[in-house]
Length: 505
Image 1 (cartoon, rainbow, N blue to C red):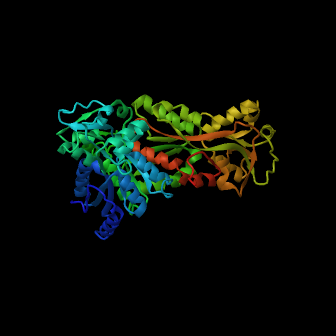
Image 2 (cartoon, rainbow, N blue to C red):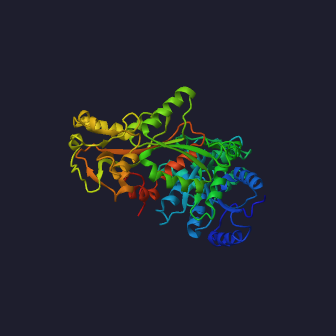
Image 3 (tube, rainbow, N blue to C red):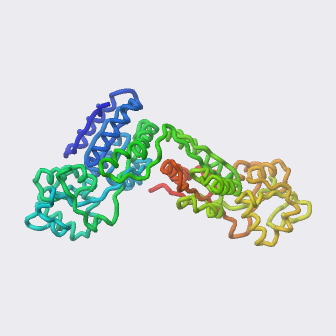
């Protein structure tokens, strides 16, 4: 399917032109059948290939606007319209997501695409014998540069150089261009002897050679695509973004055109990922997972249970099948993440919660401290230390106070999770139980809470993604959703203390 609108550069009337284009775009086809994509001009070849493939396969019209990434960022912030932004530098997307540069958030999800780095572009054969940055300021060298205010290539190049080096280049240039392709065009046509462009751009011009320099080789630049907050159909936008970034779909086009693609997810129409989640985190996690599934158009297979059980399953599965049974793990406490850390990337802390003593409403047994659980006739509930993070932490707590042996005869139940213990206390089948404060949130009218005088009653809940997940980036977006500021109220309503990201000013 043909794209509705493509431009190679944006002039000083970009905002007006873009607004007119967007109004036209909004009038074509039923909602959900059209996507509006902004993309960096230098990435044109692979992007157009992917658009054509996707449009034909899914009968979706993708209307595009192409310019320098900086120009597009400003246009998106000005108009607040569109579905996706494919930037030559992920920093533009991070700025739009943070909401600090423009006092508003314009990007939700960010998906990595590929890497590129700046190089010096010269004519085939390098007739001026340009070997480094110092040669670019020679009197006999005509230099073309893109404007760092509107093009990612010069923004990135400037950031890798000292201010004196960049200032010397900028002062020496004979032409200022809006896009990296324009700089490449100057070198190709002989209008310039040299320019600074992306290495991937240089591979697309047979008449151009590239000269690598140490200053630019030190760090790769990441291309990424972001889903805009203004997307009319985020699920459709994410479907395209996943196609674009799939290792067996869109990333093949990027590799063909000289880009170094990330290790993308494998393609699936409706991908499935598996989340192992400690029982403590269930009430907070379930609504977040449901919303994530709906927005992403994916399936999250959740396995809730005691962390001892979950860790045991992981260890057994890896031992017998050499395969981790989950894509992500949300643990009740860091100690259980540590037991399987070798199979996961670095974890992120989401929340923390303290252990408390749940007692019957009104506290008829007058429980005031841990030692009261050892009184004759007390009916107590503790979680199983082999199956549960809470059970393990409880045993450690009682051992520190030399109470485990004294309390053990009063223990009537040792389940894998604390939810049943709170229920039994509320039904007056148990006098008391050691649980997490979050476990009592749903029973506030039927149980009371006695705090424990011990500084080490806190459990921290981390989440991490499996190193070998087939849908690593999708799993990372789920992790990001769990730690995002949007999840904070969900956890705090359930008596967790928040450790994840917080909303900006």
